[in-house]
Image (cartoon, rainbow, N blue to C red; front, side, top):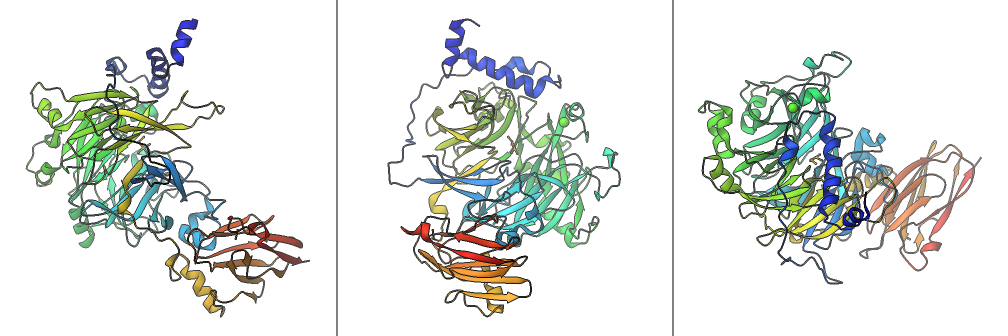
Length: 629
Ligand code: K7E
Ligand code: CUA
Ligand code: CA
């Protein structure tokens, strides 16, 4: 390599550097399978972005952001909250992971919420979505999937805490997750990605022809799985319409294969459309089966059934995104340079048998570039699709794409913007609701390569913020992220109402308060030790800078539960409880009661202390546990 090329590659937008980096990723994704034909030759050169940003990303010191951004944490298992447009990380919400700071996964309250699955320390959180009323975000809940351990969790947006979690039966790896948008979020729709035997109990181990997966609907209020729909093929991403009638999901493995080459064999896979009312009717009429020990009604939605339609689309489709005008489900082709626009208004006719071919609901199939993965919207008729292989976001005009599909010679591509590098999801502000405002777009890039100081072999990812308020997209900001935000959702700050301190009757710790009542303890006025055979319950208050109990004595082998109630009523005055050398730590925010259980397995003196900085005498806030031999 000559010095000149090397120097050129130092420049952020050098063409030779992009070629080098793009080539690497393309070989990574497609080289091994070798089944992509001439696709790689068809990249369109990027148009430069001449425009200046008209939207200011600058939030003056001391002022608040305009939007809440919720970023999934991928295989870190958590959710991260950003202020948009400053991209300051405001909070992390532990969900499927365990958290050293807050005690999530260790406290009795969090274990109750996580249920049996608290034994898992990992999760893979991909798709965060905020609940709706009439197609607008109502700020009650955020829902998110766990691909790693087949779970769905709900986060309360008044306190920013996970408050419910369900393991979905009969399927493996919940991937796509979306909410019913209208009339309100009654259902959470969840895709089981991998196909497995039914029941998966050791039968049909190596007979993939007997593997299946299902589309699940979870009641958003009770978090019970209400019904499942058995499908052909697998399920990747999903979205719902703006009427409450239909939902759609992409399938990349219509082949039902277990090998990589097998999953890429067909030129077309499909989008499955689910008719929600017909599914509910089947459940009501008893037209379902159950599987194994599960009581969840399973409705047949295989090809030819009443409740689904299978729309062929090219090839190994990935993203499924409803346009904010409510007109289209848009499926991204991934291994095809196209996206498929499915016209929702034609679905009634399709289900009524009035169309001769499933493809009659396709309104357009514009060619956009290489590796289209996800599409987002600005509410002004433009769509923005991430192109993984091209490392670009393409802005295109939906109406012109339809006209072009109908034979008119119009250009529908508006602009291609280079991003750094290889974008997965993209998301524009409010773009999953009818309130899309077309201000900011985020490109969640899977590779950061050389955008940041080197930190060894593992790199951060790179989420880029793009101003879409003008005619041209303008890249304005890079944000490094740790493994691995797949998706994000950004809503206005006025759409969320938070509590600044806990209410004493909050259901989050109601079971703990009930336990105290049964022990005859009023946690708001007293500290007390209850001995119950081998079990010891230590109730203590906390008021900065002291706990209600400075020492307590137990016997070696006792099961100890410490219950701390924070009596401080001041916003932002959180205490913690950490028992040294016992792996015990938790957060206790103002007016909260929190509890944690451990075994005093060694005799000796053990200090406990407050680990959230609360007072000038925070270091002194502590006490001793005396464990008798
Ligand atoms: Cu990474 Cu939505 Cu899980 Cu696409 S998914 S990139
Ligand atoms: Cu209480 Cu620090
Ligand atoms: Ca396929």
